[in-house]
Amino acid sequence: MNKKLVWLVVSASVVALVIVGGVIGLRVMGQKTAEGHITATEARLQGASLSGRSVRIAGRVVPGSIVWNPSTGVTSFLLADSQSSIEAAYRGAMPNGFRPGDNLAVEARYVADGKYEVLSIPSNALCNVCHS
Image (cartoon, rainbow, N blue to C red; front, side, top):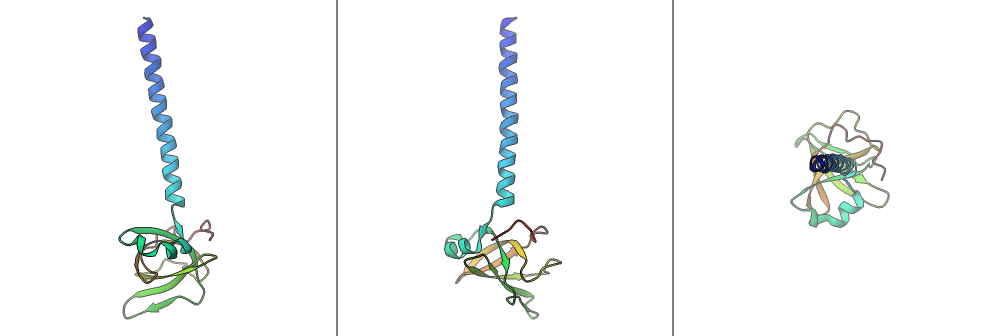
């Protein structure tokens, strides 16, 4: 009977540790997803080292920088933080409410010469927490 009690306590402890570890892991992953972006300055400094992979970049759309090319369907704009800006280009429909001065987080890929191709603007990209 004593062995059964020890086995039960050990088993319950292992299950509890797995559950607690899982909850902690999900919270950490959730934070990285929500906050896992780099600033425009970091994107400018890292530049070519980011080649070949998608990164999430957060910044403010610089007023006066938005240019739409109707022949290519590409919208270009500057994405800035308090120190620097990067050139971004997006092919596709811009999200409703996209305006100069907006805080924005985009998925982008480094192209060349400090320029980034915006791969997607998630529906929740217009955010109030992307302070740069």
